[in-house]
Image (tube, rainbow, N blue to C red; front, side):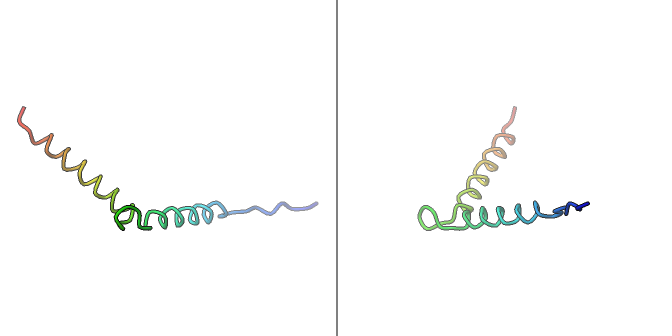
Length: 59
């Protein structure tokens, strides 16, 4: 009988390659020469600042 070889850990390598590609795309310069990661960080910072301002208002 022929034994079937199990492929263990193959999916992890595929996920790491895809993650590296996605992170590389986010690191590329987009608008105004800034990377997309900077735009996302600024958007999160703006949203967090708005959230903090809204919860600090008196009732």
